Image (cartoon, rainbow, N blue to C red):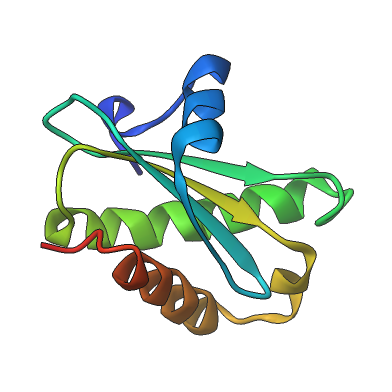
Length: 113
């Protein structure tokens, strides 16, 4: 589980990342990154009802993505706000495939030390 300090919670913070952030999209995920003035990175996950109408499915995806972020967080540069946008095609993917795509996106956006 992500610590509270590593979460983006407020709508205005999400809006700032969407307006000023750098983007990377694949078929199953979108990643937006903006710099922050903090000594740590923060993450937000967006999963709309278009992905699945069932909250159980959306929450499972959210937990899987948080688990990947928790594993990778010590390897990442501090001072970034990251929003992960989940797209409907993710439902056909296994956990390992999701992990590969997410880590690939993080690398393309230069989030690793």
